Length: 498
Image (cartoon, rainbow, N blue to C red; front, side, top):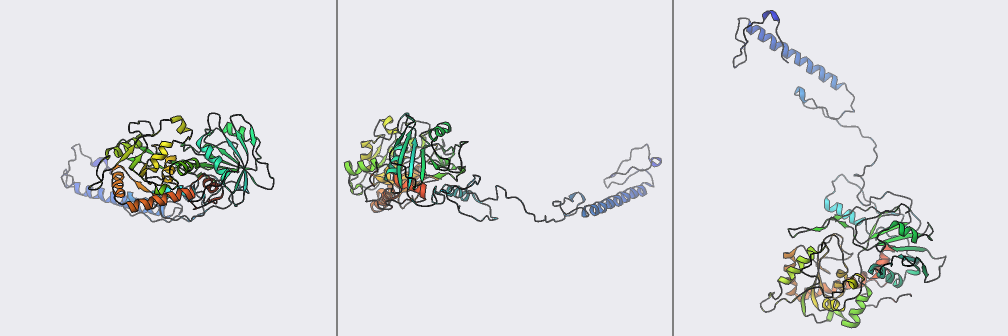
């Protein structure tokens, strides 16, 4: 603070200061300068003491005090401990759906986790989100008992492949009995078996075939009692967890696609995206359910190509079923994989042997492929290949070709997935590649190591045949685990009920 001296001692001559800051005009200048500095110092000291005294008398509800303006260290402060409402950040990241009343047919307990003060890393968050979709932890039904099922699906255009394997699984499982089928094609219900009152009734809808249309679903469920459980199965590539206003705590949602943000960059690197937040329904969290190997594929391979595909003579070293000139908006990764595999054709993987590759779309029946019709030439090429390469679409994970390739008995090389089907383990029953150079290196290695390649291929075949067939998927969704012919890959499929 600058203090102005009395007017009577002011001079008309400007008061110039020396480098040391002392005034130059008059013998009494030194005295006045001394008084000015003394008064300023005393004034500032008194202000500091008064401020400190005032601050120290304030209530202790303040945060850490900022006294830097008087060049003193801040006073440390410990806020009082108080009970607060839990925040969204303090809740373990499992499911984000709001808890509601639990129906009798639904699970009443959820896995618990103890929150810690350690910050959650991104891999941990991703694993927590993935666990929240686990049907083993959150099955639709709380007890294992046979249930009757009313199936609802949209066949106004054509019968979707997902509708076919849902129907197949319901008729083959020992724990489900199909009693009725309602189709949007005619809005009529076909009674398959009589309704038994002593057995629980469950409604299953092919939600993907309905394009997640709430209005259509509401119409097709008009005969349902509100106390009966509804399972909506969406095996489309969409990651949307659509919500309908009329859903109650008896509704559960099943999704094939739970990864969002996946894309293929122009630099040639695949961004895997992230596991989507589990929105769930009033009845519980959304469950993840990958695609299955269809029974017609297994039947055709066994009956028409090779009864024991593991012992089949395989003349093709590496196969990939895609057109290297395809520029569809979801196929850029597949196009580059096709180009890379085609580029190693006839290249040597040892001193004497050259790689024989097979890169093309075998069948041109696109409409038939979309409808799930079998392509014999495609299946024959699968069984004839030592290594089959599979890649995801640019925007989502999972494809029928993954399970079909495993069922062919070939070693399956698949690009990295955030949510692979249950039981798939790298270097145990399949191999994961991270990019084009990784893929080429793995191909050359396993062509030079037949024993390792055949052992992994055998494990992959046993996995898909013993745990990823239509009835296995239905049972895992409903009861938390497969129940019928589990880990019995050499057994024939159970007969269909009707």
